[in-house]
Figure 1 (cartoon, rainbow over the protein chains, first blue to last red):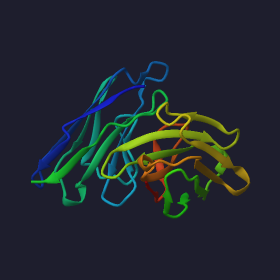
Figure 2: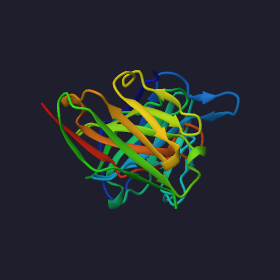
Figure 3: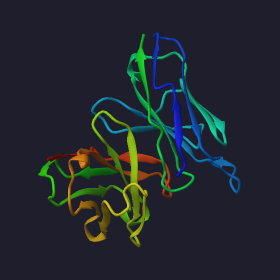
Length: 113
Length: 119
């Protein structure tokens, strides 16, 4: 299985400041035939199912505010929330869908400082 | 509108069997994979497996292979997860989810089914 390692486990950021979450995969999730990174980011708020915010490592899901961005390639990825808002408080997970089982990271909890 | 509606919460005893469901609507059911994700209390997301309703092609995580059975009934646009012998450690929220394309990232999720197993 591909192991997804997220850091940090939790993060407290002031309103309006930047939040950065890292995700590392145990092997590359870049598929050479289409040059795509098979990596998604999800946001989960308490009592709700997860919601995809970024897919293909850097494509923002429709309706997701542009303060959310994804970057990285092969084994190292970052989710950045510029100008953190109160509604962004959640747990964020990365997921690789390069090879079954399509494993998730353990999550990063983002809170307001 | 794509909707995934899951069956209601279950409370079971250890050793009992259980089948929970997820009904898809608002799209061509047989054209999209459906996956299942476990979330134990206070914990993260675990990918259990995924099924393609058209031909019942199923892929399991090794962690769940042999522990659950994922199945589908195309005639009623419903997928299932089944346990033959529940354990207390099966207590969790179970989500079904549909990928945007292929068996890839999930862009639609069910509301979740809470399974509580008492020992």
